[in-house]
Image (tube, rainbow, N blue to C red):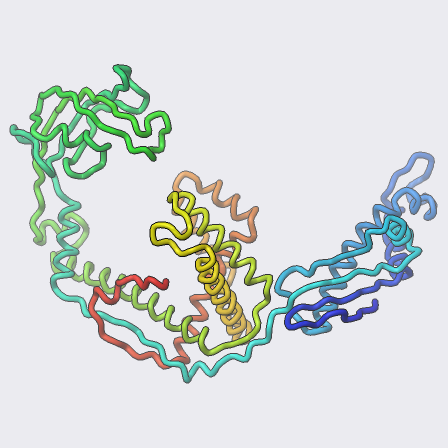
Length: 448
């Protein structure tokens, strides 16, 4: 093997690699000799097929396979020898001359090809012990706990049948038949359906038409399906519903006492309040970690400066830009209209974001590599199990999707590794707590 460097410009590399014809022929002979014991050809006993005959029959096919394997193995060896890491799979370019290809396949000409790639930069990691980051924390007051308990009470409301006209927050028990132009339509009918007035769970107009109805009433109400309704044959259309009101139920909210607490698994109302407080704290800790993580990322971005592989940045930008333009299309928006950035400004903004993402990804990757921070297969399996639970009834399809898509599994692994690296950095950095209000803690940063 002969390697000649043709280009070394920043992170870009181009090499010319020559693999001698005699080395390829040796590989070919070895493989064809191994085939002799397996191949069955008419007129020859097993293992007695002449080498030259085998070569005439299978030489080009086998040589094509040998070249593919040799190029891949040689590229790996070259990168290892040069102590370089390719940002992407190297691009290989061979001759396009048919005569030369025939000579290479016949082992009459050395295999010569160019190998182009971009290398990952070596990063001089900062002294993390000198970096300061803020950790925002907020006190939990009694009103937040009261509100949390009240939400639980609201979700535990019962309903008692009453003989009066229905009003907001009442629950109606209904039979109804929906019609378009006097004809019942599929999916527009139900029996013993529950409807809480004011809950906006039915299409506009339906609930409003039932205010004031009593048990036993038969009424016709109109409702209009939204233009983006998921059933295309109903979207934007006005339907009539023949409704029979079978019961009007008045809401009955439980009292916040020990008796209620026992119905949902707590010994006392104080035990319930403690659990609610714990939930609020966990939520606030999550907000605090997210903001602290952003502070860490900002600090890492500021503390490191190095060249970025153009192909990685371009790939990241393309992914972001596709999402941006797709969403604008869904929202019927155009660049430069209704407060939107001009396309040139938007491209600059998302180019900066792409560069930041690539820079931080490389920094986090190098921190993980230098400090042996890894994700075990068990951790990946546990994360996958949690993802699968989000699709009840489709578990097998989700499992098969991840089995067939290694890139999707990598998307599961990446955030797990990122969180481990953040935990490692928190052990080294100077973390200063800052008391803020809950509103400040949960506020969304527009830059995010």
